[in-house]
Image (cartoon, rainbow, N blue to C red; front, side):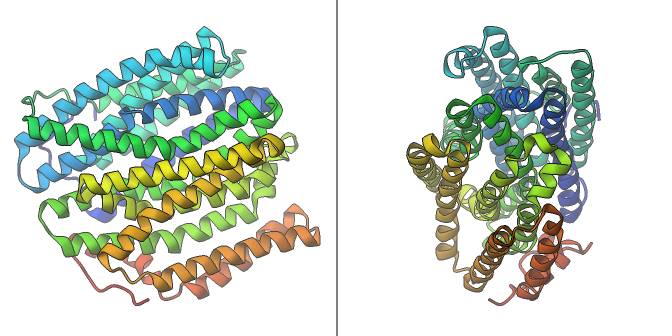
Length: 493
């Protein structure tokens, strides 16, 4: 675990095992990203939570402007080179992306200071802490993507757990010692820097040929445009909420945002495993396996993620009350909106990966979709963020994510001829039932302890609706998962 990463190491375990390990690793990161604001909010209240969450969101947004996408590039191009049997190309790719990551994190880390001071009206010292988090998180994304690209998921997972424990322990010490303000992001920054060093590819490689260099840089550039407008949209919403709301209201939004995003990490874990697998299949020119993986992953996401998000939305008041306490009651009305905003992005994960893996043209399509969604969301913010404040920010984010997720799904659906008509109908039915339960609960004036009853009713209805699709979930949990064998029969409808 402490030795330098070997790019020629054999892939660890099966596809199913890597998927489960990935979920464990992302769960650890979810705990770090969830418990950090929870501790801050419990110790310092909504106002301090708004400041710290804004610092985290600002750093995360800056990392999207290159470093985060180098991790995706490492995952794709290293897996493609290994699938094609070209180890020397893998070393070349790692060398080039390592250099680009170093350059980008250095520039963005320095840029964080004036952005924090001038754009968010913070102080210079706070900007330095944000810059440190940019450097750490940017390096972390590259190192993690690289390890997934070479199949070292077990190693990545152990380090995920390690830095989660270290980051939370350091934060707790700082809170007990009386630290307040943006400096509380420092334990998270140090934890990510430790992961970066542990997963850094120190092996030498050749300078890439001009064609490969253009392909790598082009992939990252297109990815930056897309991820900045999609994933960055979420982080930008936190910054906008702080600018249009009072510190107390921004803290309420931060509390809801903290609870809305961890569920999507389950889809992220699938993406980190699926993306290299699709790249390897595409490198072998196995189009049938590639198309089959997209279909199965989409069905899996719908079957699993809809009840997860719906249950969280229906239990939002109870969850907020238990986790945050009575001071954050307003977060309970924001959480369902944010959950239904994150859900489309989660369900579109396989389609986005499909477009990104095939060609630069596919990457451009996802980038256009992301920028279109951001434009729609910003337009809604301009209309309702002023009078509705933090609720208007959440509604604008929901409007934008529907566009960002809808375009890739429609493109892949039409291009590959997937039989998703029945699946989409079941999805819309499930979301409709969840919304009706939410409205009915509020209309009847039911208390928070009725929330689990509503959730149980929804899950029962959903299991009946998707009974034919449950075989996808069962197939994922089978040790002899057929993802590694190639395409198999597709469920009807």
